[in-house]
Length: 344
Ligand code: SAM
Ligand code: SF4
Image 1 (cartoon, rainbow, N blue to C red):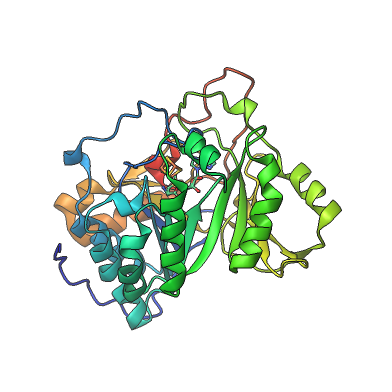
Image 2: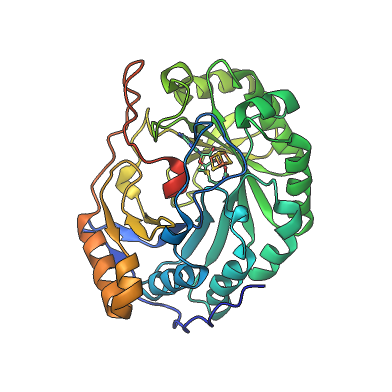
């Protein structure tokens, strides 16, 4: 087991951060690795090159980053990647961050995972204070699942999901809606999630990083999906806000909640409450902009004052909105940076 230094004790009720547009920033996503055991076609190319290990922040440094943000008023932290459960010692990091929940300084620690290794870690995550996780699942058909992930075993993922549920962790399924691939599975997925007591969030494919396919062919606008679903289900707007880009509806027939993330058909930047830290220690202010602030130098030489100054700089530079669009066929992606680097 990795031993992380005990975290600083942050008093509950730290003042919140505001960016230059007055938005309150209280949500941090930390990408703990850019590596992954799967190769989802919209996310990575088959020959994806990963960062050299010596460029990565250590678990202690990642815990220090979390401490600094909690001290600045961040209330929710999500661990992501790449595949976070591929990072050795991840449950120890979760435990270190989870201590802030016990003191009341942090409201929530969550995780986004492909669930291939969830069976091994669900209990430890629950014990660390993780109450909710997002699991990415684009198909309930084993052959299609293998196709979209290139290597994935659906049965292994289902075992992981069952272990998470058994550990008392609430599960939300993230499904990237892909034209001509899983359109016909949206209704079955909605029904399955209803049966399981899981929320479902549908996501439009975003133009991040070069992959082997042309995303133009797969882009499925969710406004049309919603109209189709309304033919069959009673959808009523739900006031629930996760503080993120999803808009929610209640599905009367399943009793469940459905989220729609539509970065391309809809702009959700006005209420943006988040920043992201990459595993190289780059603090990114917007998924749709290349700009970032280096935290690694501050972590390795400057101490807490330097870290705070870097966070202030990022708050000042956080842009008002993203400018995503799926450009024409064959065009370069909006950003060279893959989602697996910034974390979804
Ligand atoms: N490996 C974990 C997983 O798949 O849940 C966490 C990282 S993954 C990058 C986070 C989320 O980003 C997943 O739900 C995935 O489907 C989504 N994602 C990855 N690339 C995307 C893209 N280009 N457009 C939209 N969603 C994407
Ligand atoms: Fe891995 Fe998640 Fe990207 Fe799929 S979406 S390749 S599981 S990081």
